[in-house]
Image 1 (cartoon, rainbow, N blue to C red):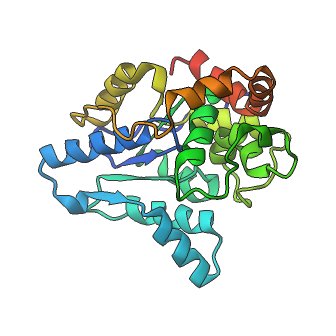
Image 2: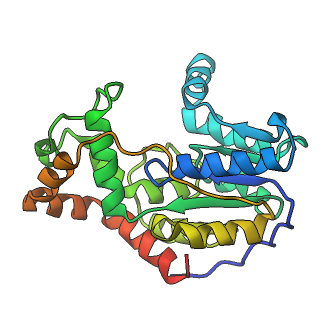
Length: 256
């Protein structure tokens, strides 16, 4: 893996940009960050929290790509002098956000890609509002089930850094770029070690953050057991997760 020059470290007290990757414990992190700001008595204006539905609606109405809209909103939030924390389902875009790395603490929490895939699949299966996803894991083998096929490359898509359509297939150099960009973040944690992530977050930002457990899964344990008992489905998930596995293992090897 090629190295790139590290970004200057933002000072304690600099704004925090938390990039929330779905089904990686981000809801709990957001609650902890929000509470930390409240304890510091900065007031509600100190927190910018992306409303994904409204962001998508604004993008449609203005003819702007959804992820480009979010890229711009994160820059806006970080340049608002009242905002101490900006958080939501953002991505890292080099053109929009590369300039912000010395000025703000970019932070994210990742999860074992296989576990994340299973959690997301079951969440969509048992969440009534998520009607686009199949109600059974047999469709993991269907070519038409392209959305689920991309869940195994989420880390690559979110952190590879180029200004491009978000759904562009993973290409040459994308995994390497995602790893290099994450290596420039102030804190990248693993859901397997929330305590370690919390300590790193406190040390980097100076915030008195405590992270509990919010947003428990909707799926019954029997559904997970049924999926994991299907050897072919497990093999298929592992295959789909290979791009994110490379990113995750690289980050863990760096001490995340």
